[in-house]
Image (cartoon, rainbow, N blue to C red; front, side, top):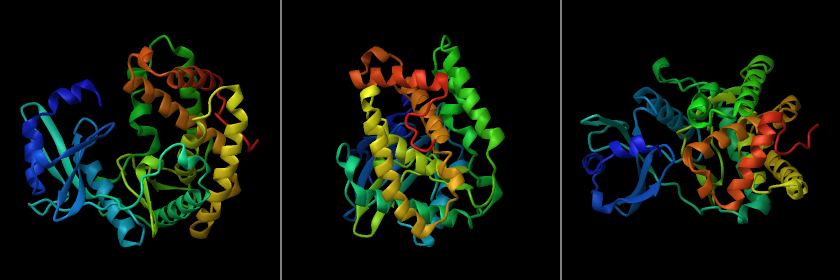
Length: 334
């Protein structure tokens, strides 16, 4: 969370938001958040999530678009963490105190078990269930139309990190910035956009944004929902399962992990949705795009890179080279 947002977020705002959902500041448990301030609370014996979103990060319409998408998925049988009404019977609330403005929303907490590293690195059943869940999401996306045009979510190129590349990356990283712009330009110019391959996606699926339970997978945190190619949603999951292996010594492990994930994930995915082999061959390009987003995010969240652990320092160095030269973190498709 950027310092400018933290300085605007105060106890008065938290108390107001908590009261809107029939709880109190004393009962809130902070659970972090990268772009939002997120808390857990209990009501009538059930766990809920309370989220404060800076208006500089998302507009009211964009948040409404996220909730519209969530409710559509829920009503069509996908297991997601759904929004709940405030005491004022609204799904979205707004608070303005002095020069601070936040959008307040609350969700049922997703049921199930948390999946963590390194447990997830060989969990074939998890990959299969993720595939089935994401396949269903993409199949539903093909038929989705926002309830009103004003709440339509953004296209992929308006991703927060891509839009703020020059703000977060050091000015002396000209080659990195050139590599980023080349990759983005290539995607814009060369990839076809059609209803079978492109639509509203989750935008940030990884093991931290799902829970595994008896019904399969429950997805949550749709704050990054965006219009993009469906393969982008698949690649995001793949990326976070291979980037843990660094260096030349990790190449074989990355390739093994990528093969393992795609095999089991696609078995589940193809039960719910069909994706052309053309897009599977574009996985390396989208791996590069995801690396660009993560790389920029590392600089946003860690302005002082000297504070990173050794893995983080190594990752920054390796990702920098890959982005400069347009090399994906793993490529078993060429």
